Amino acid sequence: MKGIILAGGAGTRLHPMTLASSKQLLPVYDKPMIYYPLTTLMLAGIREFLLISTPQDLPAFRRVLGDGRKWGISIKYAVQERPEGIAHAYLIAEEFLGGEASALILGDNIFYGSGLAEKMTSARARPSGASLFAYQVHDPERYGVVEFEPTGRARSIVEKASGPPLSDWAVTGLYFYDARAADFARMLKPSARGELEITDLNRLYLELGELHVQQLGRGYAWLDAGTPESLLDAASFIQTLESRQRFKIACPEEIAFNMGWIDRLHLESLARAIPNTAYGKYLAWIASEARHPGLEEQRAIA
Image (cartoon, rainbow, N blue to C red; front, side):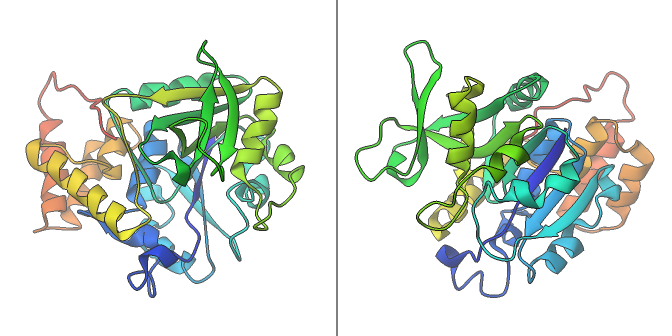
């Protein structure tokens, strides 16, 4: 399975902060925003990524992420010239996917919760169909929402309905699709706003009876850091968690190490590359802890 990170758009809701920078490169507490969706897919065991962004922002993403080799992964890049919808990412990524299944995540979405990796692994293990994640919100009119049958199966998906929402379960920006996603995306017609809507792609799977929706209930956090208020909320949330525990959230070096994609010596070299920083000292501590026998390697990091 391969991963797609969609990090385009002009970030107009965050102006003037985004006049000179992609919103996905703005800091969320102590890390660039893009680290959070990247590490979410890393926790799903994905090692090959395509990051899609604007022509002007791609060079900055390359500087921040590189080719991924330092984390034992591969990152490639592609351009989306203008906003043409989330589903349009599958037309851009078709060659990269090469007929494989995929996971798509939006570059401004942050997920946290114990057991998230297991839920993603379950979605990844499905041989066919699509898997979405829904989150209960107090302002469902801002999102696409999923309506459920009494049995828990998805009944309908509506994109930002003009009338009262049918449900308060929002569809989050994390999607798992089988190898047909690019073919299905090619069948879509642009919406009234001229975009290929991800809701329409999901409806195709729903009509086939192959759409699976997992609910993220109590104990999970989903943050869409696309406004000044939500960006501040996200930073405060991460700061609170990291100040109350010893571990960092969304640390790609640590996840790569725990996954066995890099070894302790390589982790130590990454720590030495940024000495006298809190982040570098954290990496050095993780590497030193690994020297102790009996340390549990797989931690709940999201």
